[in-house]
Length: 224
Length: 336
Image 1 (cartoon, each protein chain N blue to C red):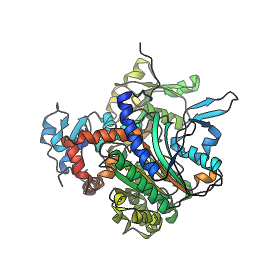
Image 2: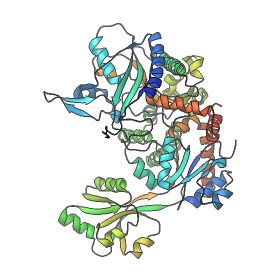
Image 3: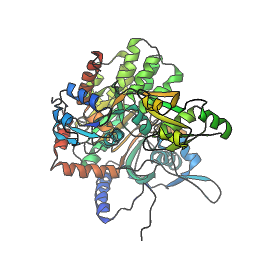
Image 4: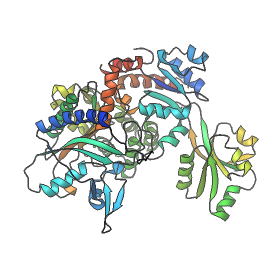
């Protein structure tokens, strides 16, 4: 079989990119061009399509890619917690271990302004790029929250008075500290995951299982 | 002037209608030839009656009140109405009963390619014929019907809705967590499934089986060397796999992890896949308890095809004949 077993991969640009390319190289793909050309998006010769991480489930669900790598945060936000009408239909096959981050609830340092808002106004305003994860968290913990969806720089929201709290992903906590925010609750640990299209998972079972076995062996060898 | 229509619905114009008609005519010819008489039922049903179906993830989403204040639903499925028809209109007819339908159903899905909120389904129901022979007949009709439309590269995944529950029973998984494990499997989250199984603290063999068995899929040979705890649970599957004619056998992928969104299935279940489409074209299975809920306890099996999805797959295969590189790669991996 060829290194990629005739499979196409949706590969995330950004924080997960370097580790993902290492993984593809371990599988035997020729990643030289992938590493050197950051303008190109489609690498047909090795069956790789690159995109932003939040687009990976879209491509994989539609079958435009057989497999994809993306963060658990993206999957939680898009496939959700229940198989409801909006959930992305993809198989989650493997925890790849890298890209480890934590989804947290953070507010300004000092007396907790979110707790104060909850006590006096009955509801806290929460800015986030992950509205479904945030809504699920507050529902599950029985608190009322107004979710304010923003597309970037979430840490600005409490400073500017848009919200009392934020729900966001943090790896080292540096951005939070720089903005005088402290972690009040840790919600989920998120790592990179391997996902598969449900039809490819059946029609290309042998190729996918062979690849999974090689990735598990790599994990066992401690390379991840 | 643009006058909108609701999200997830669409107008079908003559060119497309002609192509859809060709597909439904081909299907209907096979259904009728095999003795399946076409029925038409109302799009609106009483919510209280429809709820007997136990549809779970395919529950009706659209409700209206009639002039007496009764709650009506737009049907989300055709199997439940047919169970009602059999119990009500054929209370004494000698089984088996063979019925088919071409009908629109309504679901609150996220509209996307091949997934509309108003969807045209074509299917059959075989009532009063137990497994495995009833299942074999339904699969044979399915393959003949798909062949008649001209679809070439499709495969049929065959699983069993009772397999994982039986496995959990055999391995002594506590009743309280069985629903949760099934739910996780239904979400296709195999990473979470492994975490939850490990958290149960079972012995190594049991944990390994609970994680590994739902990932087993391939030719009928995967049924041969299974652990004793599973071997019992796949008796029904083996019966079907052994009795299907060669035309069906060459299409089969035995899939021990197959799960369907609909709650009434009791035994063999199946789905149709085509490399030209990222989602299943249709599926079905055995529902041996459903008729009993309407007062005429009979074993039954059936399937429904999404006509739009079938159309997309046919168009995709046609384009694939002139073929892009990625499609060739897909085809190469398809038939081993």
